Length: 125
Image 1 (spheres, rainbow, N blue to C red):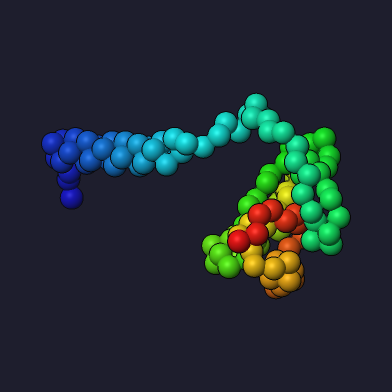
Image 2: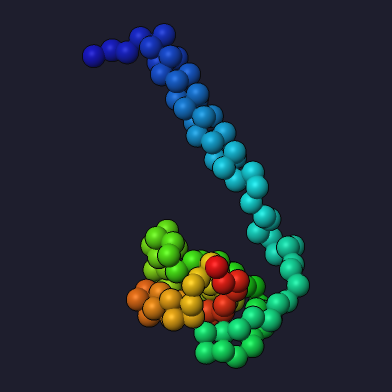
C-alpha cells in the first residue's frame, strides 16, 4: 500500500492544526495562573487551627502551598489524596477551611479524608 504525497501533506497539515489547537487551549486555560517562580509573596496571616490555637499561615521558611477547601465540596474531597501524596521536603502544604457550618463539620471532613497536612480555619458560612 502506497501513500501519495498529497495525502501525506494533508495528514501533516491536519496534525499541525490539531497540535496548534491543543497548544492554544493550554495557553488559554493557564492565562490567569500566578507565576510559579517564587516571585509571588503574600503577607503572613494568623488563623485558628482545628484545635483552637492561633497559628501563622506560613509557619516555616519554605515555599507553602495554600489549599482552600469547603467540607461540602466534592471536588475538594476528591483532590485530598493528591495533596496527601505530595512529599517534597521543601514544600509545606496548608489547608484552609472556608464556607463551613461548624468546626465539627471540618473535623469530620479531615478525619473522613485522612488529611495529613496542617488545617486552619478560614471564614465560616
